[in-house]
Length: 275
Image (tube, rainbow, N blue to C red; front, side):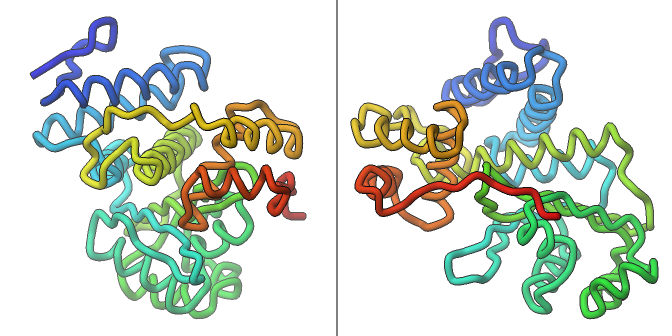
């Protein structure tokens, strides 16, 4: 078992690659939040501790499992929208979580569908409420019958690109506390980062980190990043994140997408909040 020097006491790993992955992600999370006590580092620590306690690698599955315990919900599902217009369930922590993900896909309505369509969090604390029954007449009665009385769907979004949803459910009608919602958003961000890492070849499907760095030596990737940064009026880091997200969504390589941006075949547009 290995520990990370300078990181919270008690975090143990089964391999050097786990240490490298966690160190990189911890430093990024601290940078994003500005301090060691922010939600992203805290949530990442919870996920690592959960995976280590089971003797399993850190993965999207162990991340979702950690969310169930820490957020005091009954299930979590991680779904991705494919270019074919259907939703692919990447992780479901319980049979009901998987059933709800399939239900969203079948009736094409519900919190997760709206979260993906609008790019905003959709929090349904009581599916028995008349206004929610009217909003989702097909989804709501079937979800309640299956055993879910509250569903919270968070979009997996970078800029204007929404890749899917991180959905939580409860068997009772009970809202997420403000603190739990903040942590849920952090869980969703980390799940998205893990999916993008997997697509870029930085993380294998079983959660084991790869040693190779993101191929930023590519002149076209650098040039495309600068062009996207100008188009979106964001930092180079955020522009690269948007490039990676779109490559993932369109199931193409980063270098291929970068070439299309440089050739001016593709242009990125800023995200506009729904009115």
